[in-house]
Length: 104
Image (cartoon, rainbow, N blue to C red; front, side, top):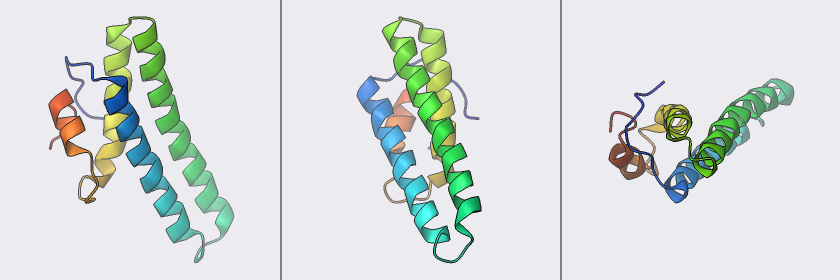
């Protein structure tokens, strides 16, 4: 997991990172589905997507109840998930770097 930042980014920033993760997971599923047994690939996809959704939802809910610590924690979780794709050309580095998440 990435370091937790003192900065709590906007919901728009976090949404952009979530959408990036969602798109990468979709790409992985499409890449594995044609050549692999579909059930294991779909199971992995569902688990990973569920983790990203939980982190995003946790961030939004924390912001709405003004819980900055929980928002930072959820943001760190989502940023940690996104870090898997740091080499991807669409990696939302500016989102993560400005918010203090990740190594980019």
